[in-house]
Length: 481
Ligand code: ADP
Ligand code: MG
Ligand code: ZN
Image 1: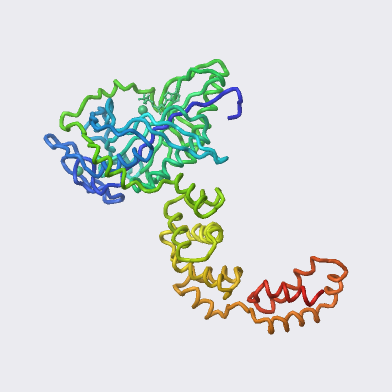
Image 2: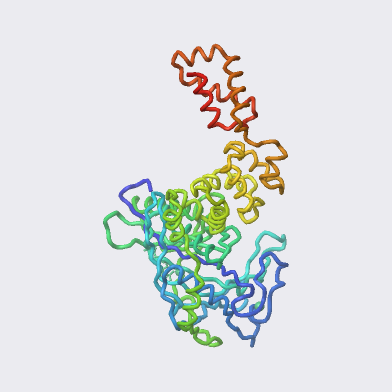
């Protein structure tokens, strides 16, 4: 924020679509991208007399997420109807939770840029169903409605207003999304809408205790978008207040194309929705044995895994953070270390961070789609360890491996890349290089140490990079002294 007298106060509301196969209260498929209005039934269309039946898997996933954030799962919670009219909500209400959500408390440990952890507390997590989609641009005739998404399970995660800057909001959302991905309960795709975020924003003079009037910004469809929108809105509120005006409590829309907020409506109050317990659904009872079962299935979470990587493999924090960014990259690392016995974990880490991640970026693929699996990479390390190839040649071999199915050994064989470690033939080359470069020898002997690299380079050139660099160095030193 440009003005240092002010401070932003931010609370985020995150909607995460759960990756169940079927919807929350009926057995329609949740599959994304099917023909419009093909995955619908009397229940999710809200036809009179149709009764909802709760999907057990949706509850399991929701509880899993809540437990991962250290929240308290309530043994009894209530589904409520949130009433409003909208074309993509045929029932005229959304089944949600209001007074008694299934989860309260908990926190997200956001990792700030300097590596420190800021705990951002959660108010609640509740389970609800999604609405359909209004499509404003697919037909000339007007707006079309696709109800396939109607009834898809969501969890809404509501933070305390503990966030103090756009960067902290970014860190919160990053860790939240990363955790949901580790759990496998949400695919975290903000562009496709499977993870959505609304930001409540107010500003206050630094040092004041009370919160200012807040606005709510919607339509944030990327993690970076959230950061930008918060900065924009906080600056806007500051300039309103500085020029003597006051902030209206309203709901705003983020316009990502123009990078500004637009007014959407004045803020609705909870009582506008006429919440009441859904008479078609029993209270949701989550017995403690069920909670224990789910607790037992929790995977190691990002922060714990990062710490373990530092301890177990002796990696710098930076490496551990990069490698645990996704569960899949972390698995790839551990699998490679296990298979490439005797290879320093730090070497494996360097290789993944520079070579592997670069190729993934170039090809724009996920590590799970990468053809060089840990077992293939491990063979490459073995060849380096045995001295069959040098680290430099290994890059060439790796490059070839990303384009063929051949093993590292086959490539080394086929391209004749075996490292030359035979002292006799290298000695002959060293002598030849010295003989052919009398001027450089003169320079070296008169104290120009740098010329040494030139000789190494010449020998490497003669062998197309295959000479064992350690032996070449030793031989050169001897010959030149
Ligand atoms: P509502 O039900 O009206 O949306 P909540 O109390 O549930 O209100 O809060 C919604 C979100 O707004 C929460 O994430 C909370 O942290 C945040 N919030 C509440 N007050 C403020 C404020 N003054 N400034 C910024 N965020 C706020
Ligand atoms: Mg709200
Ligand atoms: Zn249905």
